[in-house]
Amino acid sequence: MERGPAVGAGPGAGARIRALLGCLVKVLLWVASALLYFGSEQAARLLGSPCLRRLYHAWLAAVVIFGPLLQFHVNPRTIFASHGNFFNIKFVNSAWGWTCTFLGGFVLLVVFLATRRVAVTARHLSRLVVGAAVWRGAGRAFLLIEDLTGSCFEPLPQGLLLHELPDRRSCLAAGHQWRGYTVSSHTFLLTFCCLLMAEEAAVFAKYLAHGLPAGTPLRLIFLLNVLLLGLWNFLLLCTVIYFHQYTHKVVGAAVGTFAWYLTYGSWYHQPWSPGSPGHGLFPHPHSSHKHN
Image (cartoon, rainbow, N blue to C red; front, side, top):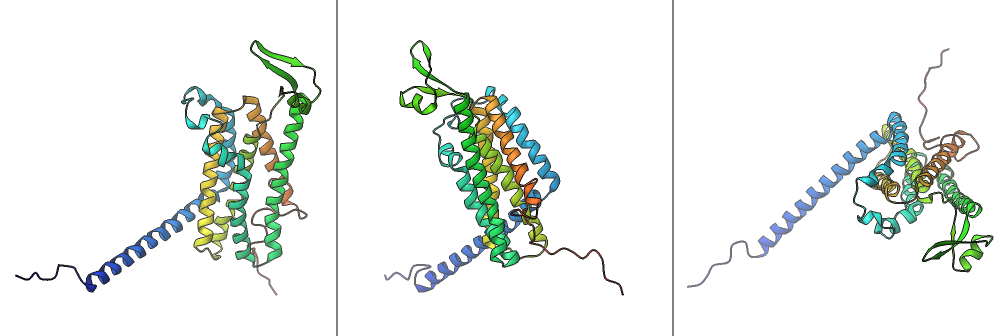
């Protein structure tokens, strides 16, 4: 007996499968788009709240001041307790680079889409140049403090032997260790990046409220900034739990907060500055009408 054609075989079945896959892809894209839209709207509303931003400063202060107490309640052998862990090497050590890359893309899109002016866009992007100068200047200041407060020691089996070598360079050249007051540059940088990103991302709520174009690329880069901000918060908590001495961490965070205050809290509100986030991007509503 001859067998009939297999059920579902032939060109018709292939067309139906392709159509089914096409529909599935469209559904997945629609779901992804809806999640992107919903997530960006909620995150913008959250970060755009002035009350929440004030509480965020208190949160960062609490993390740095009270976070070290958690070292008595966490596993000291976790991956985050190692200086060589993946997150410490790939993210913390390059925190400013990551922040500039993601935040720079967000500021570029928001400002240019709102104004269509290259000069205004460049002015707002110059805040990141100022941030880079703050980071480099603070790093050099921390090294200077360590040089001025340090002494040269030679590690021995019995302990440390103090040497009278005058500076770090000659001490390290002799194969010894230079020990001084070390402000935590990681705590400084993560605190500064957290405050900076929260301030810049808060503009998106007003951007959406004015009905400006907010396509998929802008919403995606915004959510990537939100995720990076969450990662910086987590890594700041890990840093204060596992690394550095207490006062070194507190001083680093205090300097980072002070740097934010000098720039975003003070200077950027002056007319001769790069301008505060959102400055000049949105039309001011008319509070009154002209009368004849």
